[in-house]
Image (tube, rainbow, N blue to C red; front, side, top):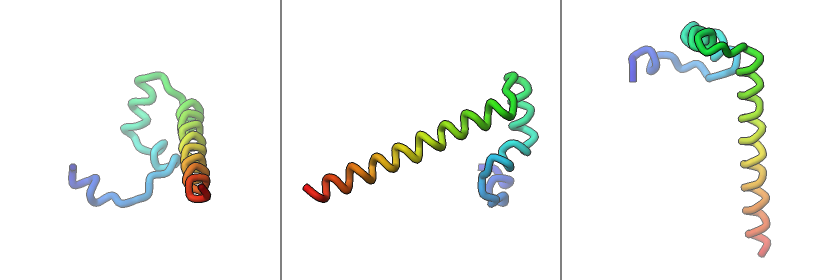
Length: 65
């Protein structure tokens, strides 16, 4: 791990991700717009929330049995 990664302890947010110059260069190279990336990240977030909620429901149902 680089020293830069160790010293940079900011939380990862959409805003920090989208303001990173390297991310923007890769996005430009790949032809990905900010809107497209935000859409994909929101879909991934929603899927994660749904998966976690399902795990909680399953655990609660198992505890009742």
